[in-house]
Amino acid sequence: MTARRRIAVYDLDRTVTRWPTYSHFLVRSAWRISPHRLLLAPLLPPLMLLYKARLFSRDRLKVLMWAVLLGRADGARLDAAVAEFVSFTLRRNIRAGAPAQLREDRARGAMLVLATAAQEIYARPIAEALGFDAVIATRAAVADDGRVGPALLDGNVYGSAKLAALERFLSERSIVRADASITFYSDSASDRPVFAWCDAPVAVAPSRKLAQLAATSGWPTVDWG
Image (cartoon, rainbow, N blue to C red; front, side, top):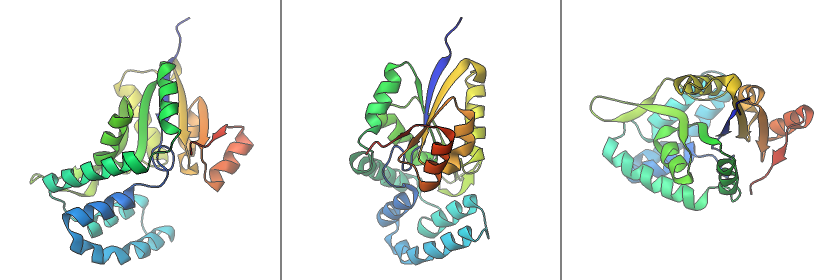
């Protein structure tokens, strides 16, 4: 009998990292690229409240936040801001136990996949530095003139969309789901579709809602610090 292929899938925000990345990325990048836009930062809390009131989608919220703080960002200047943000994140915002878990999964022969709603423009270099084999993330649209955002390409990789993206990833790699043993690490109940789909769910420093779900489902809970 052929052994099932091991795949370890990790969320990024509050799973591998200790705090969320998107707002922090926008603010730090705005400071480097167009600091005058930080005067518009007070618009962000009302936008979040409108999202909470379900007046627009999470995808739309992500686009509006980028539009407020970065607009249509110059590609070269954004690259420099991304490099600074990635360096800061790797130094200051990685859970202490995350690299050890990555090493353990790799030693077990697992393919390491980062699956995140975070923007690929910074999630990919973070993942590469940590030794991931593949990245599934939200992508910002790039215009013909090289300017980046605020529109998304193919939508936000969140909730059920993350599961759909993982299924496409397996198909593109010619990996049959039944032939794979998949472990999934996340902090958030928003990833419930992926938790239900994987073989080995692991709640990492879970939110209250996920902690309750993990307790009733019998899923292990860990804290990487």
